[in-house]
View 1 (cartoon, rainbow, N blue to C red):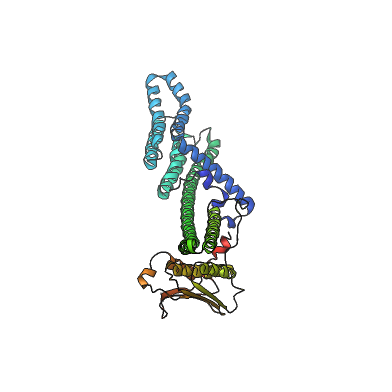
View 2: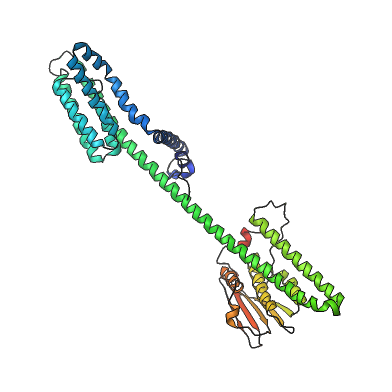
Amino acid sequence: MTAQPTTDRLLKPENLIGRTRLGDSEYRSVVRLLNWLGRVRAADVAHPRVRLWGVPAFYALGGIPALVRAAQDSGPAFVLMLAVTAGYTVPLLWRRQRPALVFTVLVVLSEACLFLRVDSGSSATQLVALLNLGRFGPPGQLAVGVVYNLLQTFVSIAFFNGLKGSDRGASTPVLAFLAVVAILSMAALGLAGKLVNAYIEALQEHAVRLERERDQRAQLAAATERARVAREMHDILGHTLAVIVGLAGGAAGLAETKPKRGADTLRIIAESGRGALAELRRLLAVIHDDEPGDTPLAPQPGLADLGALMDRVRAAGPAAALRLEGELIGLAQGLQLAVYRIVQEALTNTLKHAAPNTTVEVTVAADPEAVHVTVEDTGPHRSPGAADQGKGLVGMRERAALYGGQVAAGPNSRGGWTVRALLVPTPTAPDLTERHPA
């Protein structure tokens, strides 16, 4: 599981949607604005009680002058003003959870204050309730709240600010204009806050989805790489160990009767082991991302290396022959590697079951449409069930499938075993040797 993305990382340019629809300057402006909003939102999430209590406290401070005047007049007036100030500010503590209820309570309280001609400096909290109604309530409730506030504003100005003959009538249009601007601004800010929250949540979901897809792709790539490495190690070590086992069995018999021949065989075993160890080190160096200078790298084997492969098989005992037909020089390196590994695995199986008089013939023929590989030995006889076990035949089939081909294996009329493979020169899958030249 991945960690929840932070707001700053989600608002990076590479994680935003629709970049191509904006110019560079507009895009940078949008990024800066969203980064600022993201930091404000992150601070608010990190310290929720600061704004929760800070807003009611700020508007309560606005009611202090009215409380001081009421205290100078009489005790009951002070108590009434204190109750009105608390009624305007305390409900704001639930402005997010119950925006419609808080707005209704403040509307009722403001109507009561208008009826009683009580003027409190905290009455502006009704605009805060309208703002939160836009942020957390449905659009229909916001529309009702805006209409009601506009009507209430005009009524209060008309009947309590001297619209009919008062000496303050000249300032009435200005007050009405400012009130309308304040109401519409709060409603617009509420809607903008809702849109920003929705956009940030969409960015978070998009970033989480991208991270999940990236992790899945990484896991799939790791599994593919493990399968490739396992197949390479099986091909390299399986063939070499089969040669070593065959040579060691012969060397044991030659140690007493023909010491020089036995010594030569032991040297071949040592060379085969060193070669396998060098290939294994190169493969492990690639796995561990070693620096290229730490371990010398060698090219992957191809058709030109089939001769050396046949020499190792002959050294292990069986008589081996190789025939190359058609235009083989221009084949892709990945296709040559697949042919080499298929031949190598088939010869490894021959060595595992070889008899003293076993012979094996390898044929690689290329035509414009396909490459045909045939490995045929003279026995001894093997049952089809035994040959299907292990990773050898599976690995050959996987390599052939990379090039749209197939592999068939079974007993032949000469008492031995035949492996036939067909590969198409144009690969149907990515060439792994191009991605992993080492």
